[in-house]
Image (cartoon, rainbow, N blue to C red; front, side, top):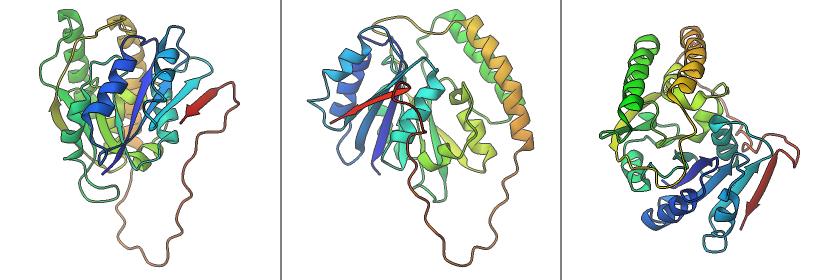
Length: 263
């Protein structure tokens, strides 16, 4: 089961290049189909760091937003561009370990099959500071009570899931924080696997506890409404010929919105 690894990044010079090289080094070719890096209009050396690697790694693709749009938009751009039916995602700060991807893939069902359509990472030993860890624990507990998604670590960026299932979800900013709940709402199974948590080597986090809580509270009640109002009945009968869907492509944008480069 080969995958497209999608990595959204914003101002991750010093992290993103190291993560891309590590991903190609630790994942065998029968697993790794490509790496897609989506640069959310960084103003540091992120672009140069990726461009310098493209001659070495022909299965590396780089896309750059024309303006900042956030992590969920970066994921969506990368997943539209991806060429394989299973997506693996990681944060661009290097705190996720690409060596954990095979364990996640071992638990996911083949696309369209029976079993988990999303497998999320569960950071067994968090390296975050005390205040950030407390905020995360509180937020996960609140989310679980309201969304009933039994997700122990929604903030963990390393996940694998079916590309087609993701593309059928309603898109909104910060949706990446609610993927397990959204997959469950659309009648998919989810599962979790313990993964490694690593320290950030360069740069600083783009989030604060207050900023994350402010945005999270706004979105949380919207997802609660969505969970309660979404009904996906099982198919009891399917007769006749099915017309295959055309492959999804990048959303229609001007060249100023997305700059792509690949070798």
